[in-house]
Amino acid sequence: MKVHLEYDSCHGHQSCAIAAPEVFGADDYGNAVVLIEGDLPAALEAKARRAVGNCPEHALTIEE
Amino acid sequence: MTITDPTTDYDIFDPGYVLDPFPTIDAIRGSGCPIAHTERWGGSWMPTRYADIVAIAQEHDVFTSRQILVTGPPDGQEPEDAYAAVAAPPITSDPPEHHWHRRLILPFFAPQAVAKYEQITRDLCNELIDKFIDDGEADSAADYAQQIPVRVIATMLGVPTDLSDTFTGWVRGVLEGGLMDPEVRMEARTNIIGFFVAQVTDRQANPRADDLITTLLNAEIDGKKVPVEYVLGVCNLMLVAGVDTTWSSIGASLWHLAQHPEHRQQLRDDPELWPAAVEELLRAYAPVTMARIVDRDIEFQGCPMKAGDRVLMSFPAANRDPEQFENPDEIDFEREHNRHVAFGAGIHRCAGSNLARLELRVALQTFLERIPEFQLADPAAVTWAGGQVRGTRIAKVTF
Image (cartoon, rainbow over all chains, first blue to last red; front, side):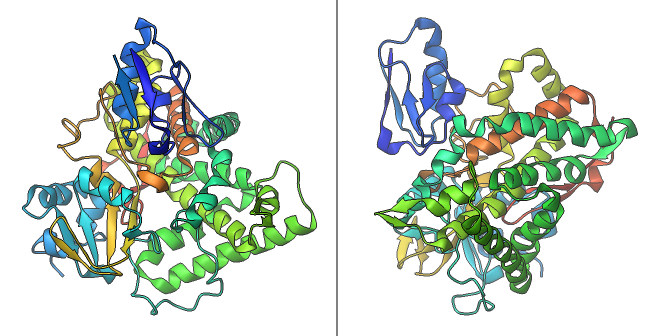
């Protein structure tokens, strides 16, 4: 499972980084960055799903 | 004047609505007319569905940010404004200027940038608690919540924290009393901007290292220094938007926790829940309602909106919409999907949201650590502010 960020849709709520700080972080402007670009470790999948489901801008998707 | 039908005559300052707006909001949302209208307070539309509020936030070319207060006289009927050129960028900005208005300040508010205020906030919370912990009672709103964000923002702006009570009075003049009385609002606004004119003049003569105002004064756009009105506007925004809002959120969350020992226990048992708990409290007790001004005549969801109409963006209403949130009135720290919009949505997402969250978390954590068991002294005696910013103003607790 991978996560994909549509950067132009992100407005920096940081909801993703709050739910899954191992997977998402912030750039200098507070917008999201994906910290793990490739396949996520299985242990982080549930957190990443929650992060994707918390984004008010629907800027994140999951690629199975 | 009695309200007969909230879909055509809601009153955001009705005492019952201020105390608990959700029955009215639910009634509007559940009616055939989920976008209500009123002629009161200068007139406004009020959508109550999450989907409509988010859609309006995204359509910033139609729903502009020319005015963002929830009340106001029609154009041209404002009291005289000594600082007419000073707005509150980027919250009052529209594209294209909005882009640089916002981009210059975002780095100050990124999570990694606000982290340095965590210890300052914790020390401050502990000092406040030291003052009342031996009394067995305190006003969780006035003695605690109200005292925190104003000092953090003053620290961030590099202005004296011992003026906190003065700042608080000015901010309430804009966001509370001033919403019903334009003269009160203008007096508070003139005080705020006059104060920052003096601060800016001081920084121009004596630039400071590591100082937000100095940094903004030196900022350049397209090879030219930014206008001083922009810097004054940002200072205005930081004070007005950074004080009442977060204080209201801390206060409302303590009001909730005072009545829910099971939620306090849950946080003690599993401290890892804190970040999600803060998000859930922000969802359920979103303090802020913003406004937009319609740019041109349009029909939105069947409503004939005219150029110049005001639309209220009730984030509290969005966050309690059962179409978006299962059991929206239930506080669930383990809620699976929480796309809450306490900080708005789209290009005007609250620039200070990371700081607000930090303050909310630290204020609640510190209170619960020092005072694990507490309850409302008299639930019926709790008072709330409402309209633009919703939160407790008097909320005595005993412990």
